Length: 183
Image 1 (tube, helix red, strand yellow):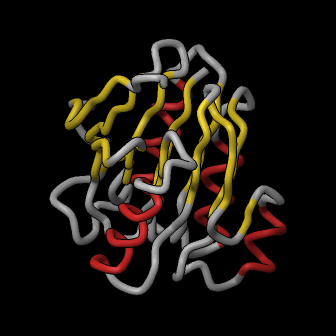
Image 2 (image 1 turned 180 degrees about the vertical axis):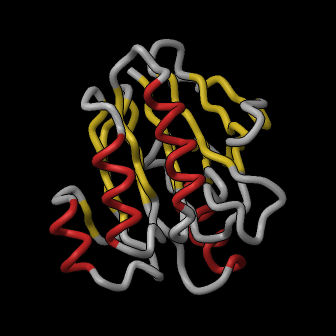
């Protein structure tokens, strides 16, 4: 199984459709987790209606996801932050972010040192990140839209070998990678 993690699409349909093409090229099943700031229902519709049926979908609402009623009519798989899940046999916490980048990073790092999660997934800052803090791996897929960032990025978790990676949407280049060490 593969888990694709995106955040901060901000209505960039061109980037969403490029990401959908990547999903369509995969032969394995999996999940797509969106960590918020899809923004409009039409963007969410483009994603969920065009992605392969072999992928399940989950949206964690972000601060720019304003029309929750219409978003929920497009996909019932949305929730407020934070959300806990088990993926690839790992305890995962998913959230968008809080106020500014500095506060978001403080909260995420505090949670990482709490020992309750193997992986913490978050967005909001538009800056990709993949590292281990205390006992948790911290993953921010960056911004799929590429806004406020040098490139459009997404994250990928391969459940087969427990690898985490950050990928450049435009080039397919691997920007960061880590192997999860199960304890």
